[in-house]
Length: 178
Image (spheres, helix red, strand yellow):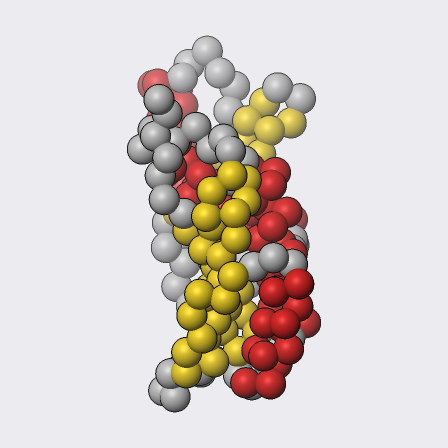
């Protein structure tokens, strides 16, 4: 697996910020970084640590140790997009969710649970060519502030996983501030 050059995270610690990059090649990297810091940020003492991490252990075990950490970031990116479109994220609104299953009985059992949790079953479909062919689209009136949406999507991910299904995200319409 070839690692692309990319920023994979940012850590803050005691008022300092650390950018974490994964790169394809480290040949000459330390000298280039030292030159860049000297020319552009001479007032800052840089901290550069270069380590081999081909299996991305640091990424998976420290930066984003749980499946839900990456999902939290996806939720935050979507919320950020909504804010940029003029949404203040306040109030209740219809929130749509997509779930996929390998087994129709498991989808049907979870559908009953979701109904008890006041979700509307908006669409039930079967796509025989998909790995998880039994689809379910649900919605409910919910808050989408960062804490509320994370709590909601975490619950739906857990419920989907318990039914051997997969939660595939959410959407809502932009509600512009008055």
